[in-house]
Image (cartoon, rainbow, N blue to C red; front, side, top):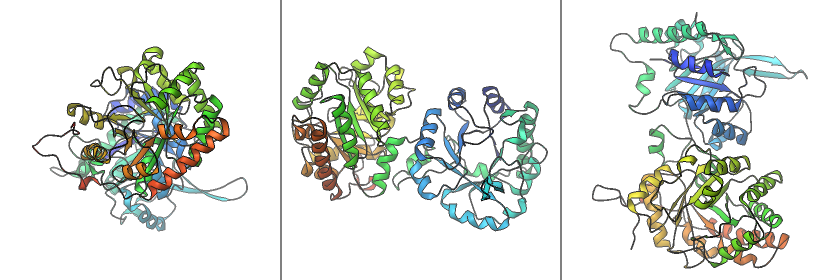
Length: 546
């Protein structure tokens, strides 16, 4: 059965009416100059109400990667539909499922489809040439309301899926389905009373005519291209996501959204490198130096930064970090100030993803949902919650389940096997493996213990796996990087800074991190999933607790 996508939605009532009429997917336009540009806040509220079987797409055109990712994450959308000149490198960096639109001016444009053959799905739309205010020629794709000659695509390359768009309406959609036999049809203006407003009668008629024509084209006992591509129990894939060779299980499970944090770590791994993430205590040694440390770390080539909120009882931390936390608290540092400092660093050029590490007492004092919302607005990308009093509890408190931050999982040698698989399955961003027993800055990192944890994670997911605790310097970092996707360094940075403040502290941290970066660049690649020792005895094996 040919699927139906209704695009150009801006209102809740139109979206719900489309779903009620049988739409399989909904599209929301965020292209800057579109007459159907949607409000992200309205879209987020609409998406939250939709049934799970409906795919949601955000439509973009030549917009920055960060802007597209942020909109996709804020709205909770499934697929990015791209209508501009976005190339394969852009699509790969986006780390979201992508539906690429190709505009057709004539039959010769069919040859350009070969450029997108690896996507396995493409949207074909009409295009037209416009002259800009400075008399430059510009090809416009999408939103034209024009059809193209469907005979052009009769001999198209063998894409598993073609989404047909451009000038479709209730009067011609049945003819289009019979002529092209597309995997899906896409409509915006053909179901409108005016741009951004749907006509209920046109909406119902379009969906009914499309589905009826598809059923008739299949004939008794036959099945359409769309049905062949569906997997029982798996959401329909409207987009293709570039992934590494070890991620087939994620892809076959319908894929999942990947945020800025995880995208950065995956990109480093895909390039054959190892990720470096430093840890800093919020507000230490003072607010200006803290900001300078963030910017200096970025100059040193880190992939992300972990920022710890000071807490009176940091049970996981050793004496060096405890001293820094105590000093920060003594000067009155609050969670709000730490978030404000991160936001200020963003205005000064900080672009790498930032993970906020918080103990459960922060959630109790400030309400978890409020903290998560404030963190997101301040430029935080990920969240790591540590609750020593409830080690076997859910990875996140209930009021944080809906927050739009990547939820990092912490896995240590004492984590019970019954919880390990759940933690890994729920993780986003990366899995943080603790290589030692006890607090930070004590025992040196154990490569063998790290390997056990890393291999366990890789048996269940291809999410990036980073190892921290006990990374005392370049040599230790190099050793851990041979078995993991990257390292997390905290105590050693603070020890290297000593009592320095301001630019001296930032320069010392930057120099030390540059040495770590150089050392892990020379490490051997970690084990792949296929190299990990498979579990035996029919059940999942957790990390060793010996």
